[in-house]
Structures are given as structure tokens and as C-alpha cells.
Length: 126
Image (cartoon, rainbow, N blue to C red):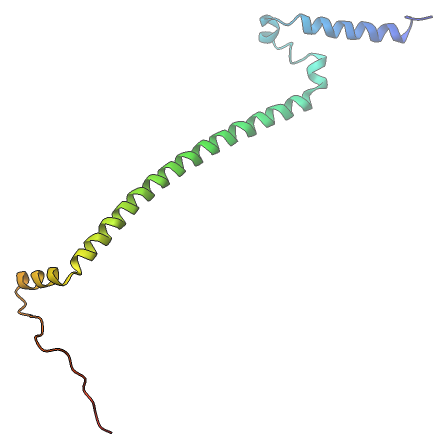
């Protein structure tokens, strides 16, 4: 006959579990009976896996935000260094002009002048 014996007990257990799910309230959450339920006990490994994934997700998010901040800082520093390099190169080009060198020598009073005679080659006989 259907519905007798062991089959009936299983049907009652699943009905009780459904009633446990429907009976969720703030009181159940506060007194801790939610964590002692059969559904939670059976799925504890899956719940721990989900908690682990949530922790990994949060850690990954913080790491990505930190990397973005470092990239922004590095790009700003690169722009500053590039501007400094351009300024230094233009100053060096300005200082290497012959007229600027002559003015600097006169200001320092070194007494050096440009040669009037062209350079010549010294030839030694062997």
C-alpha cells in the first residue's frame, strides 16, 4: 500500500524542513536556531565555500584598487620627471651655445678668448 511505512516518514521530514524555511524570522536569527537547522548542517561545506569565495572577491577588489592608485601615482610621477627632463635638456642646449659660453667666461673673469689663428697639424719626422 502506498504512503505507509518508511515513505510516509520521509514525506513528513521534508515537510518539516519546508516549515523550517517558512518559519524564518528575526527571532530565529537572533536565538541561533537557524544555524542549528538540518538544512544548514547539511550544506555547511557549500556555505563555507561561498564565504571563502566572498573573502577572495573582497581581497581581490582591495588589491585592484591599490594597484590603480599606484598606477595613477606612477603616471603622475612620470609626467613630472618627463617635464623636468625636457627643462634640463633645454637648459643644457642653451649652456652649450658658443655665445653663452663666451658670456660666462667673461663674467667669471677667466681671461680666456677664442683663438684667432686656425688650428694646425704637428707633423713629426721619424
